[in-house]
Image (cartoon, rainbow, N blue to C red; front, side, top):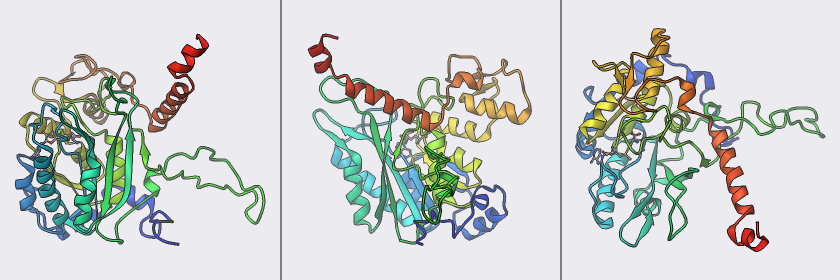
Length: 364
Ligand SMILES: C[S@@+](CC[C@H](N)C(=O)[O-])C[C@H]1O[C@@H](n2cnc3c(N)ncnc32)[C@H](O)[C@@H]1O
């Protein structure tokens, strides 16, 4: 059985993978040649400068979402050609820093100028391919909500390209399995009659992901308009790295990749240009309130309260989250990915069955 077929079980057991503080981390720190002032830090500055300081073949995973040039508050708009030229420079450095067994996950949306809409994965694919990497998955990240377009179909997905350097890349399926649809289904004939016909630990999550984007009442929402959801980054980090490995995000934003790495005993490094976002990243990593009792988001508060055994959180507040006062987790409305997937399927089925031309034709 190949490593891919068996989800990497020959290499590492789930317990080993999920086991925090297993001693592996110190060994890996010695192996890695990353300068200590960069390891487990988010630099406030330009990522190109950071990348130049990272030694070659020292990083296990690069996971990032660059600016897409769509006029968000953190972007200065350039031409597509200039943008791609800058991205090529950054990706060249990322590939240089990556170990032979490493992976790159590059999450992008659509570049927009006055009349063109260009899915950026179409442009990133040839750049990474020309550097000798090859694609493992093109992951589609679907969202049920967003702006309603009037002169085209509303955009409801973004993509993430997963590239590797070598066939010896790491991939651990067990930690990220999702529940089987029919977990109790059994073989009804043959040698395995009566045995479970599917893996009771769950199935491969597939390449269509439905993590809720971090907006509105999401408990991770900070001042940033385009944060990664932590559960999406957990899926990537736990499936492609081991405890003590090094993860790089050149565009850290408010530090989601760093927060997930800290939680799962991986080293991290990265950069963020904006001072305000950098400060939020630092606050999330520290996990404590500022001098005014404020947290960058609900999740940081909830975890602080759980750690400290604080039952009454009314003395705390947020920089931005469900109004200005601290709330309970219930109000944060975090749901598992499967729920979003089911809702999207239900919604799209309902929509497909009832288009306006049919409704008007039947007079409903
Ligand atoms: C799409 S956001 C990333 C958000 C991040 N994934 C998170 O979860 O918070 C891109 C970020 O890159 C930052 N940025 C843009 N150009 C940069 C550069 N040259 N170096 C470092 N950061 C940069 C922006 O300020 C923005 O916060």
